[in-house]
Length: 229
Image (cartoon, rainbow, N blue to C red; front, side, top):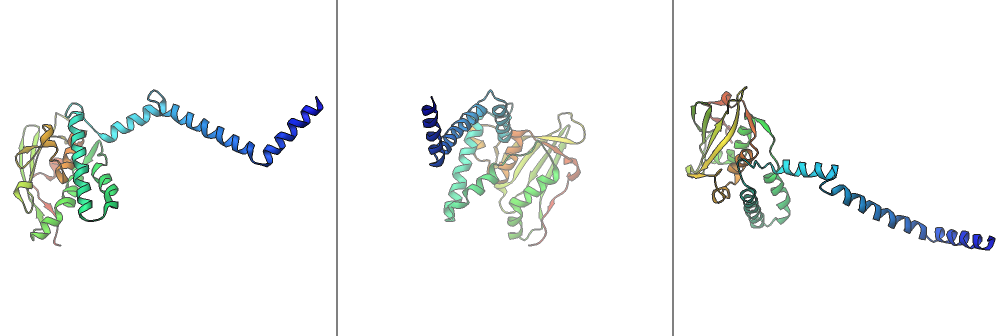
């Protein structure tokens, strides 16, 4: 028995010295970690459920307003458009940044100032090129609804009409009900949704998310000042 004990002890000692034991531990650890991650990612696990919820929230799709095929088609068209933009500039490395900007999720609620800032971001340059210091807005109001037409500084066909509805909510809270661009109802139908790019695409994401818009009444009957370039 002593000889067997010595043989085993010597063998283990050699395996420690030549790194065999260390490699066995590393392999087993990798296997254990892979198995643990796999179990954690399963849909019925706590982590899997949380991940699924996070993904659904990021997509921000309102099943009451738009179907998955419609929204997926919109996203695929957006990828094609943005990839073409990057290739035309011979800067394919920028595709990730462009897509992250366009596809980033929108919040559940925003202040109306965010709408103003987004409109300026997309249209301020066009206004400056036309020598304008404002982006004009046409307003109309009825019971529980505000209709806003953002007048494009250069092209009337790019103007966007948004219908906001209060739905009886308090504290001056509105949701987007319809989006029109160049006589298309962007918020209705797969074909029209594919045209929701640029600023119209931003409003389309708010529509899909049914984002609450606060203080819309506060800017009623005003234009958006962009200053002089």
